[in-house]
Image (cartoon, rainbow, N blue to C red; front, top):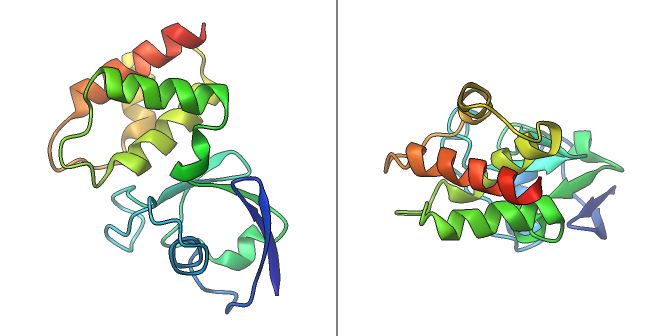
Length: 152
């Protein structure tokens, strides 16, 4: 049994230690907002927070989350920063197809928790591992600036 906390709720998971966090979140806990994209930590669709750090859940084993806090897109809006980012995403109409957006939001929240007023270069660096086939990068950057301003 692996004990972990997902979106503030404790869970015990009976899984192989090398099971990716992504599959535990989606299959065991039925939190399907976190997406499978590439399976190789290259696209960012599977981004969640592990103890506040943005990680790629498709390649991170659930054993590394034992005793840790996992936050998914379903729980990120529970705090001030997550709520501000989600509101800015809506305000800027960021999502087009939407598939990558949960990972984009998770990375943006992680950035704003460590960098209160990020520059364009800091945003680009923090978001570089998140791919958007629809090309909404300018709206993503604008939304991050808006969220930062509202949090200031």
